[in-house]
Image: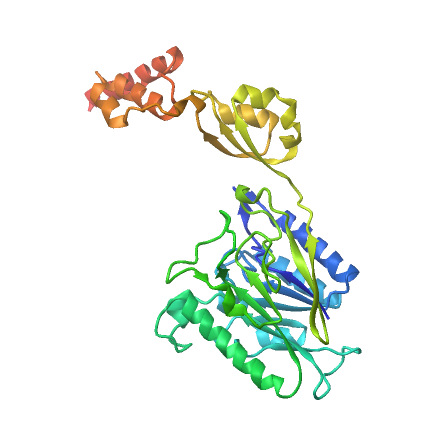
Length: 395
């Protein structure tokens, strides 16, 4: 049996204000190609299917279309809810969806109710005593909401995850009496040792965020979701990561998934699958003139760009100038190279030194951008202040 471990689709997400539905459609096309070419039996989605609890209609349609096409290609789907999803909404009609090969696990009550796949040469109905692959889903568990239902006294991520894992272990033990059980666990959580990025929502509210890796000892394979970097925590515990970069901190990620082969003896191999990004991400740093002139950065002209300017003072119309060469500059920051070691006067001290209203305005400009007002700006400020004075006199 061949499984494809994915997670964190975040359908409907934007990238610094840029819609990503087209990029997400592109990812789904790549996933479908892998399902067909690699004869994938089951696609796993370990949470954060949507980016928000109330997705837009076009986003819901995209997921609907993806699930139909995956099942038409011959694969089943097992998915869980993440901290970005509404478990209730994502789990709607789950019993009906199951008839079509889409198995949704979003409820605490279903933690020890696995999706069973017979492991035999004909891929037909399981014979008595024949090995099976049991896929369990641990959705995102908000400690304060589920602790009591799981019988734990402390509403922490560790306690509720441990309680969920114990329920699964007990179910595996019962099923193993009838024949071999190869367990696969989906869990949307932050496991110790994982490397985070800027685009993930912190799970620490409501308890300690990370759970120890050894909670998942003994399972055939643990398919984790939540962290957006594809990574291997142990041979059998892995994050697939998000299929697309959702922040510039992910610029160096190699986006992909894991292809897992399970035979009669258990997991036989785990191989990487890579997704091709529709757009590159560029993180540029330097003086404005250098960035605009250097051939070294020509590749970034078609990329989404994050730019940090190191000019000693903020250049006028910096974003407009950058976008003339790098049209998709999405983030602009300033970090003057010669600012190190200098003590910048506080704005309150500048106010104390100002002799009049014009001095207050000029002091503000100098404070926020690192250079004083020029003659054109001084003239505009004088006119504005005079207009305000005259309006006040009329009142």
